[in-house]
Length: 224
Image (cartoon, rainbow, N blue to C red; front, side):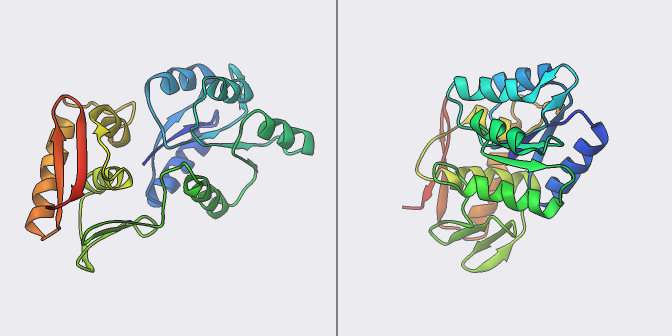
């Protein structure tokens, strides 16, 4: 699951990214409003953590633009602006949550998880298809109740497919989910990870199939 962190303090942004990585979230980090706009125009994120005091603009303008194009991506505002008027203004502009600096990192993670559990979002505490279970809180995969070990990106592909079980997941969405803006991505990278995942699931007795819908994407379903 990939997040976008928009924060003008590079040190804080990297601390957030590192901490969220430990919590199971990959992040792209951007320091300016213009870079954030460019990223949001080309990449789909599970959620955005948005500072308001950016060097080239107000984060509220980015938030309003997101909502004006009917983009439902959850946005958590993370800012030093802590007055009641600031908080109300942020929420009325389309923020899903508002957290004031300084903050406890554990609270940030809890608020983010709560946003992603809301109706219409894709996060549940447990995902299952047949005898395959993915615990989204512990990041543990089970087959027939036995814990299984997968690489971080294999697990990321599996999680994305299981969140949309029975539906085709476009290849571009898988790519956005796996790789950051700075990653050098080979043209067949997604196919490689899907192939590895498919083989490991079969070898370990998972009663599921990952179908390739050529020219479209991938779909996971119970084995027939």
